[in-house]
Image 1 (spheres, rainbow, N blue to C red):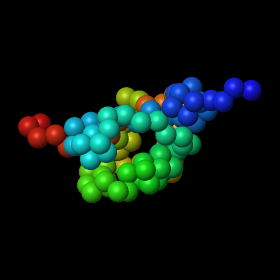
Image 2 (cartoon, rainbow, N blue to C red):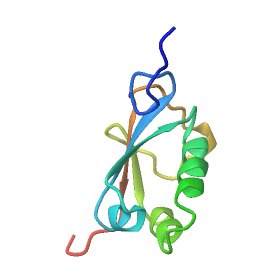
Image 3 (cartoon, one colour):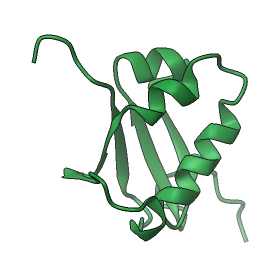
Image 4 (cartoon, rainbow, N blue to C red):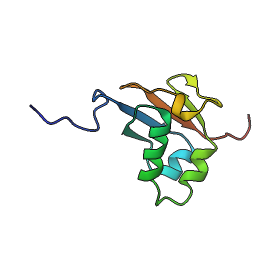
Length: 97
């Protein structure tokens, strides 16, 4: 059996994470792949990966989060299921409306 590439979005449970604007600056990357079954697990993993980045947690905590095109809003992250191939967007507040 061939080894699966963990960066391949088709691996079961692999989610593509996009960071925008200040979130991208805080993460030091624009995109990464994360394996998670729900938003809480994804948040735990990205905070673990970027724990050495000074502003990462502060910026991510104030971002709006989209699963695909659907805003998460005030829903509990553990109750937001994720599926392989989903895309999560972290959008920090933007000035100018």
